[in-house]
Image (tube, rainbow, N blue to C red):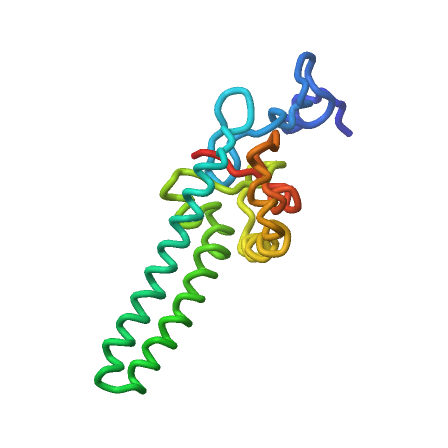
Length: 181
């Protein structure tokens, strides 16, 4: 049997050392999460403002529009030679665009905290509790929650303008924050 301050016991167990508010279990608040976003001294990383979040979303949309427009233009050009070939290219381009959108907004965002647009503007989606990424399932859920919760008169997308934690309704539902990296 061990005592609370037994030197043979691993550190961090038992009663907290005097003056240790965390009880030996780590610092309170955000530390350096497993996802690799280090917190500045004193807590949570700086929250991303509304403008930079909109910039990341616009870049994501521009990439997707570029993929779709390129497929349609190529399909129309090839359609001059063969309507069937043009239709196939356009259809494959649309399917590719949908796959790209899910990869970028669900898989990539869930696994890394960043879609391409978010990466380019230097922001990341993190769990508010521990700073970890959402995972692919969380990214997939976020994609659909945005359309059902934030799309109502776009009020959910505007919410970060006056919210203390700069959260959309989706962020509030999923307990996430968007931080600068």
